[in-house]
Image 1: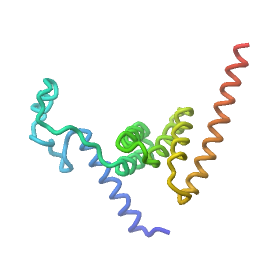
Image 2: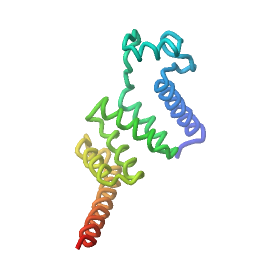
Image 3: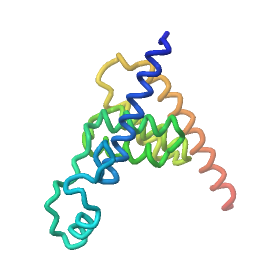
Image 4: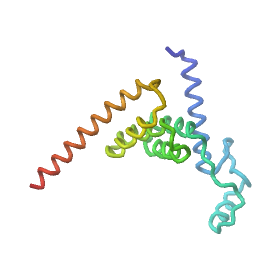
Length: 161
């Protein structure tokens, strides 16, 4: 069982990661200042003309993107979560937790086929039986999604006749 202090510290870490990610998305550093030259007008002019001296965006490690995605998922901000999980997959296509996050998020927003594909990819990438408990939950979700898709297909087929 976690102590209150552990929960508070974990929450603060996740909030810090989310704030850092939002700041990166907006081209700002963690203190809220405009990254690089400090001028919003200069960077937007540079980007418009293609003459930017600024370094290209380097995404964080896949594990950090998943952490931020998990934060958004818990807050029911599914588009933000989806963006971070996709970023994690682009950063490291073999990082299984990113596909788990994608599967859960697609499932929540009703994209069943995409959820099924992401869950299957997650299971393919599992490195060991260490994650068997989570895998059991994924197998249950896959079975539920497959049943739902079959019912939808059966209804669509019967309504055409």
